[in-house]
Amino acid sequence: MKKIFQLTDPKKAPERQADAVKHEIKKYITRERNKKVTEGIDFWDFDCKFGDQADSSVPIHVSEINKSIDAQMAANKESFYIEILAKPGHRTNKTKK
Image (cartoon, rainbow, N blue to C red; front, side, top):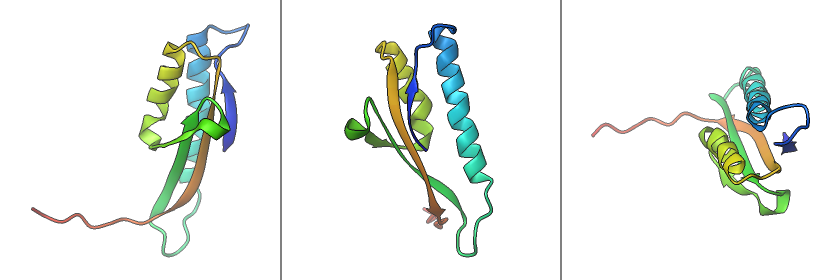
């Protein structure tokens, strides 16, 4: 998913528009995670980028998406760019201390 989302809509309050955007992103991530994994892959991981525009986007973790959207709302921005690309993930063993 590579998309520019609008945070303003003449028919919705800005808070409701932000909630709708968050819901659409969550649906996309859930849909990608539910895809069947091939042999040798443990789970689907994601590479994410967030910014005002595509050329100024910076890498973020999946768990920081909602915080980034809230920061855009607090800064009264009208839109933002998000890029979420699924990649194969592999579990690593944690070392005991």
